[in-house]
Image (spheres, rainbow, N blue to C red):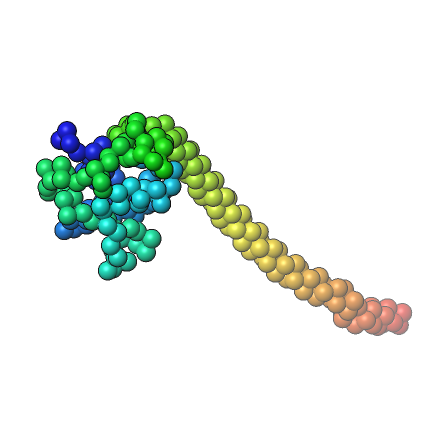
Length: 226
């Protein structure tokens, strides 16, 4: 497609890339596309903000349409349409022209009045952009793995503490049972000692029969004297 602008080709290629479906997809009918994540645009195109990107679309006669259902793509999403920009009509891209025939304003090299070279198309395609992000993705993945490992260690430590607390609780109950048994034995011993003391105070085993034995002996002595 030699007559198709780089801007339109890159936009179409980006929509074909499955890795960008979560940020800039086609609508189900394939006659419009939706920008769901605005922050992705400055990374893919030279304009440094979304307003300039929208102006570029307007120069190619793209029209922003109102979303009938914000729940489908989100309240902050943008939907754009063009009669010759369809998911299944790649050949129609040749019919998309810059208004007034000035395509240079959207190209990276030649800038039109009011638009410098920095407002053109970026030199990288989506796959190159993904490769550029790969080190960050790798670092994030490693950080996530490290956090997951730390969480697993914490879970093991918590399990060990719970097991230790369970053992302490069992030991506490065992000691408590032993203390209750010891107190019961002490009470029984106190009862026995109290009974023994009372028995001794009453005279012990000879306390009740000592007087009768003495009277008997005295009587016997009197009989002998006679």
